Image (tube, rainbow, N blue to C red; front, side, top):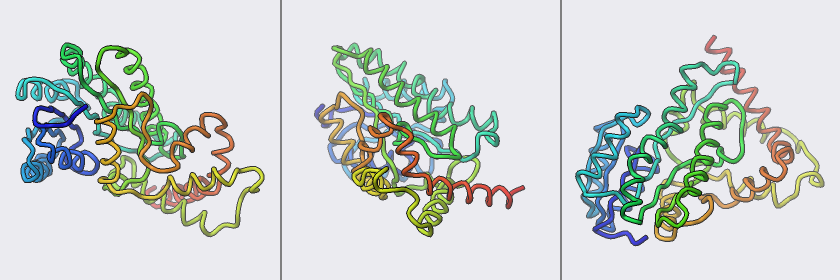
Length: 303
């Protein structure tokens, strides 16, 4: 899809991170951009950057985990700009907690934002896109939607659901002119890791990495292919939101008929996990044990 002054795009979760970076970059094409999030002050800052880059911003303050507000965000975009070409379901939040510590409230919160909102927004955008015979729905999942790590089961399950939702959506859109893509980042330099429900997942990851670095090699090279070890190390490197946006812009211009991975090595990890989950779990065993030690120490401090 060509991006130009007639392109209409709605980006949720656009007050920071990947969403904000995408909005600012899309502005350089002169597109009509609706940005949606809960934090009005942060949205206004992004809107200013969009304007400076040549875009035409529409600020929508909404909590898309709530059906009525999610529907309002899409409908407002359509009514203001006269349609919608690209919907980016970027809003999301992580969680930390052992399965036995995950509350009903946490489950509902994580799934409402990361999963249910996909239905809320897409159901309003799809009829317009289908009538136009063009459009693109892009859902932001994670490598966590393909693989897993401990003490974040609600988030892991939600991101797997996002991958499944997109696959089902893509199957419904065959030969309609409308595309659906799921993007699967890994580590991105945003505030996400510190804003997770139940505690900072970033600190959990740091603890896991520090523990793993202090341990001798916990597996035999014969058991774990070197190529897979290299892929994991590469995939875990931090990228900037702007790095991820480059992949997203290319995906908009050249829609993919498969899932899109932003980090080198991450697709290899996803494929290896699908083919032989035990071997990728064994590859990360020491890291997971370090996360356990960190989680248990954190729990003791809070009890």
